Image 1 (cartoon, rainbow, N blue to C red):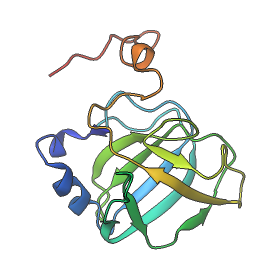
Image 2 (image 1 turned 180 degrees about the vertical axis):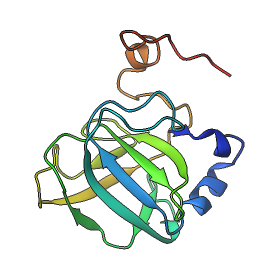
Image 3 (image 1 turned 135 degrees about the vertical axis):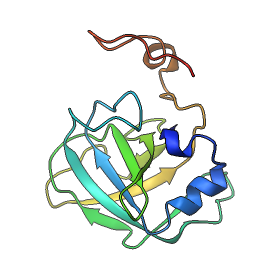
Length: 153
């Protein structure tokens, strides 16, 4: 999870509370370097709306149980999920999450999205460090071509 600067000092419980009634928008690859940056190179694949509260009691294995208004939403485009952006009900960006197949924060029941096909979250977990779980050696150490490696604040 990469948290927007307005929420950097919030606890995990405060972040979960902020998402009540908000949205989780799933995008194709190319997650921005920070949640404060605009999404500029990714296509929107699907959008979920969080209920109130946004999360139920975590499951026995420790994964989160998101409380979406609708459990499965239709995809609006074709592609493979790369990340998801969570926003408050007023549209304020809260955080970005790694998403897709494999060991990601948000894993879906299907590997890719097809226009009109249902998209459903299979598992949801918070990685407070913000990296890509399956390749932190790569994603957290190599800058994108033409960009500097992000500075740690």
